[in-house]
Image (cartoon, rainbow over all chains, first blue to last red; front, top):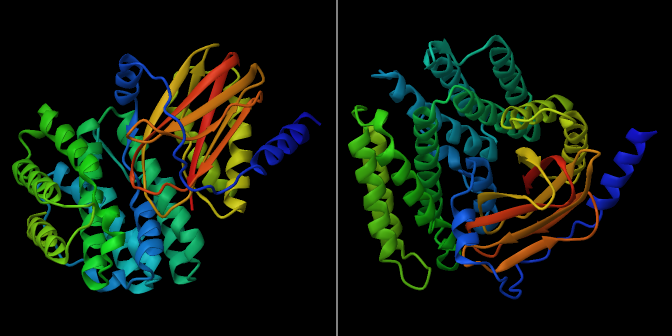
Length: 271
Length: 136
């Protein structure tokens, strides 16, 4: 009975969900101390899934598949390198799901499986037996073109990988996974705008907050100083922010998009 | 669908340090997640923690303009009143739920992409709470 009441209470509360646009309500009297405390609180990077959904609403359906090259044979140099690429492939998976492309997504899933097998967290492989079976299930869903479920499975997979890094206190690996995912998601977003430029929708590309966050995390992580790709990644993030600082009226020009894209395409070759 | 929510919940469970009565709050979070999914949302995460009366917890989350977000807070049986306020990066309040209920529901569609500050306060009671963060 109690369970039923809890359920009813939740449904009643959720029935008040409405979709108001962001209101410009009055300022709240927060002290500087309050603000600082909040700024220092828990932060999590947004998923590439949320980005691709927002992009679809801003610029419409896009053939993301055309911007994602199939995974070829690649030599990974270290555990850090594997995790960085795991982030990249995770983002690809979200975008390919939005494009509903089975062939490329199966290829990316196979690569994710390979990377998960190779990545070591505290001496253990990330690819647990339950994760392997979930990946298999994911491939089956892709083959069945059950895109809604595919998208949810990828979200669960990404969250559970993040969680493994958190549990193992592997902040460095978490940062690299975030950077890989963000760089690829942002590159694809730029490709989308490059193909279908809508000046008044480019505000979504003003991601200087995320760039600064990733730069700070990477720069301050002492164990990533030895990773050979760290200097290049820092330079990339820094270059992107320089370009974004030149943006006027919150609208990126086509030339600025091309410039950002050129930085990321160069970085992608290096990753 | 159930499996997905259970895994999301486990992720949430791992991120907290206290244990008592967590199951009740967890069960409510699962129900909230189901309800949100039924309404077409993707549940991104379910972080949670223990809060005593008068204390609050802030989650900074980057939200994309174009999407709509639902942020639902649920507590265990000792929680009497949870409130939530969301500010944008310029400290303008964009959503809130401060009624006298142990469930908070805030939904909004940000005009601009950016970091939003989601602060949940244990107004009355003490216990575990979970914050279901979803988008569509």
